[in-house]
Each structure stands twice: as C-alpha cells, then as structure tokens.
Image (cartoon, rainbow over all chains, first blue to last red; front, side):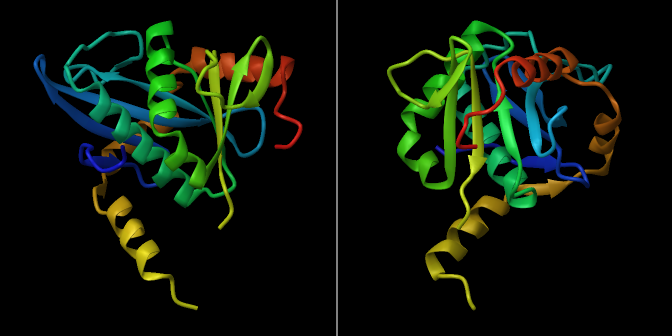
Length: 148
Length: 53
C-alpha cells in the first residue's frame, strides 16, 4: 500500500501536506492537514481538494480521478511521516462523507496486517472505541504509532 | 547503536518522496477542516479514548 504513491510536499512544521492526484479528470491538488484538538497529542486528519485559483480547500468534493488507491496510499504515507516527526501523536480520521469513510475503512482493512505492525488501530462504533475489526463498519478511526 | 539494515531501507523509502514547501505554512494558520476538528472534539468529549490508550 505504501509503495505506489504520489510525491508529497510538506510544510516546515510537518503538519500540512500537499500532493497532486493525476487521473482521468486531470491534475487535482490534495491537501492533508493534521490539526490540534482539545486533547494534547491528539490530532485530526483533514483531507480535501485544493482549488488552484483560490487556494481554498474543499473536503466535500468527489473527484473520481480513478486513482483512489494511490491517493489513499499517499495519505497513509503522510501518517507515517507525521508520526515519524511526532511519535507521541494519536490521529483521529473520519471521512467527510460516508463514502470516504468507507474508503478509509477499506484501505485499513486491506492493509491491516502491515498497518498493525506499526500502529494501534481502533474504530468508533455506536459511541464506543474498539480494536479495529475488518468485519465491522466504523464512523471514525483512531491510530497511534507503536513504540519500537 | 546502528539501525538494522531492513529498517534503514524502509525508513529511506518512506522519507524519499517528501519535499519541504514553505508555501504550505499558510495553511497552519487557517481553520481548515474546522467542522472535522469540531466533530473530533465532540467525540473526545462524549466518547473519550479507549481505556488502554
């Protein structure tokens, strides 16, 4: 999963990432941002498309650029990079739409064995966190880098 | 203590595609994905974190 991905640019604090999705709809600039929350060392993963004219970012647009797996792999690479820089960070991610949440879920499920080597992975279901189960359907995901 | 060779390769592979871009610094000051952050804060307040976290 982590191998086939786009080149990534990152800000100087390693909290904002940008890459370009290349597909059937053309080049689409993507932004990933790790935002602080009310809890120390707990970050929200935000992800959306950047308008090249206005630089505004929209996380509701559906691009359908035909490269969702490569995009997901690239987002996953930012998780590795971010937690390399902030090893005590925990990250919560939920898709901006149900479809995007399902995409995250599939991405985690399809690579769970590899991901669990490096991360503790939990899913939010019925207002309760549980250890990630491939068969369950979750509203949000929580990951934390394992100590090596 | 040196890093095992396998880890060095994986580490290099992971880092090779990243380039620093100062123009992205501006997004740190913008409330991007504010609704998502609010939602996350709501989850933290109402559900909390797993006991073993």
